[in-house]
Length: 542
Image (cartoon, rainbow, N blue to C red; front, side, top):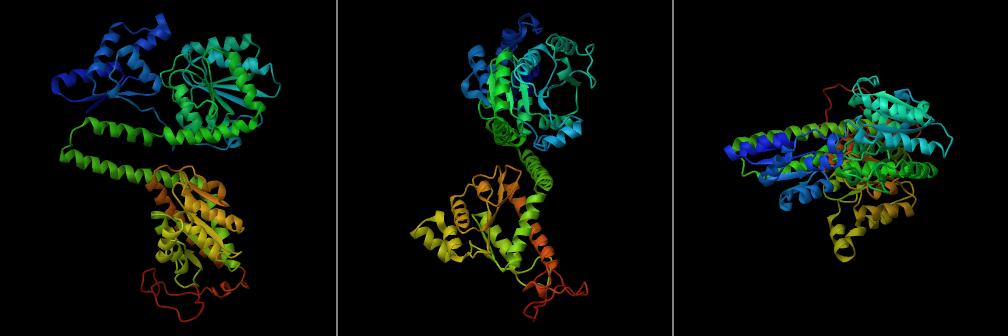
């Protein structure tokens, strides 16, 4: 299989298919006829491009359109077979772009923390419509007098140089003409490793091209939690959800841009809301994991049954990808979840110190994890000799679960047990990869009625459980298997932290007053199943 990108590579792929019967997939990224419509004489490609693209469209086994507008152009301008078109967008790497605290991002970049900051980032060419951004910013400045700055990132050099990037000179002249040159900062080209700081530092990201086949910068901005005002063209009108992650406006309309900026800053809660929804949309639709999965599925449609060697290579790729994606999920969780994990362990420790017990629930694999956690606490984790900790998995009583689910409702199997067993000093912990399980939601609502502290160990966007939990721990991953792998690690960390915190509890607290550390020979105890059974009611801690 050949996957060709751009029309010239597509011509090579078509010739190889003709000579060797090897199938090919094409992603054009930009269509010649569309480019000519928008750029006219500025389009320097020869007319022969159109005939070559026509051939590629006829002969390709599949055509990847990056957005609905791309598909529409293929159908109307190239008479493409709709059954051979598949929409797969470009994507971003969540380990490269994520939301950073705004003040921290600004301080990292040396920017004032209290200015209203508008960001434009991308290539410095006329079709990107940066002049519209400057004019719209100027119109907006006439309507308000708070400190504001337009930051423009891009160019052919790290230091902005009009000789190397003529568009910068043209844009700077426009800013001077409008009397806002002191509020417009050109910062030049920046490395990808710092772009997340620029996106996160901005209050609003603006991209107003009058021609844009797709455009990756709106996705990167949304991944960093920044609302986007974009031109209603090409891929931008697909990636930006109008009224949800930002606003769409007509190209070359600075007045409309100024009006949208004024509206956003007049309603600052929208900036926060759109930012959260932008992260969710980017994670739900545009991660590289989702893009590559869609591309791989498309390849499978095209390819015949693979040879055994190919299957072996594919298996190794799956192994490597599994390990690598798990490590990325763990690393992101380490950065983001430490405060929540520490808060959860302290809450469980306090529950035990008050004489309360821990109730744990989950479905499927999460049910097994609930029993796993209960077993570690009732038994032991890192401390071979300690008192058992009162933890109860609500997933373990098969007689009750099947009877209640059959006779009453599966949705209330955990809520019923919470209402039955919970005491005022108890704590409820729910485990779910999605946060949308109705029976867990019902259990947390029952816990709320009883004024219990609750902890939710979740994934993806946290679902409905995120807002119902006193302490939500949301694994920053989308794939269920990666979420479960990190959740097991978190369960083990909770056990270790709880034991450590109980060791340092006040000595007058019962029954933990009898957790008396004493030295043992290292060889006397291990964590296998052959530990000597303590004979005292509250065994001492080795």
